[in-house]
Image (cartoon, helix red, strand yellow):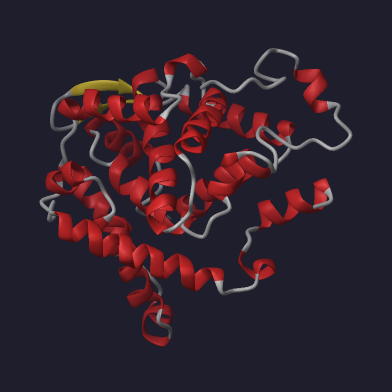
Length: 288
């Protein structure tokens, strides 16, 4: 299911000249429902852990990002990109995508364990990162209690082919339905393994550095540990086995229960306090 959009058809001017631009997706989209859900906190961590089982993708992160020196900054910048491209105007989304493409176009490297060269803007790597993100966002939301029909799930993946366009992929290059995403992961699994860099990256996700005052004076450390452990448990069984983590059904049940409890707890907080700035800005822009 591919979603048409004015800017994707080449009619960028009409999209940018709307009196009230809904952005790439708009408030009636499944993308808004999924990306505004409290489960996104868990989903983002799951996506980072899953991304790291691709050796070339992990080498790109290790060699060209500042996640070790500034893990929180990288996490917030990633969340900001998702927020802008989901809830921002069409112009803001296009600018964000162009910035990412500009950075990726300059980056190359060699995966140290295999000696295999890579380019960060290689379409296979871009497709991997895209599929990991959208599958994590949707599957985590569903396991945490967001109710979507199968048709709505297909629609979400179809909408996200527009997101893939921002980083330089043709929408026809990426899976656009539940069945296509599942087939993609079956096809790519022989290429996946956890390298030394992948384990170090996962450790940063599970146990990131925190200032001593924060660790000792607040519940941030145990709260983060619980959140990260739930995200790791929500990985597919085959991915947990790559990390030498339990790949058994009881882990799935425990992770789902933790996710439902987390989402239910956040939903108690008034919407004005729990919604992010990008969603709040979109609602104000559209008069919602």
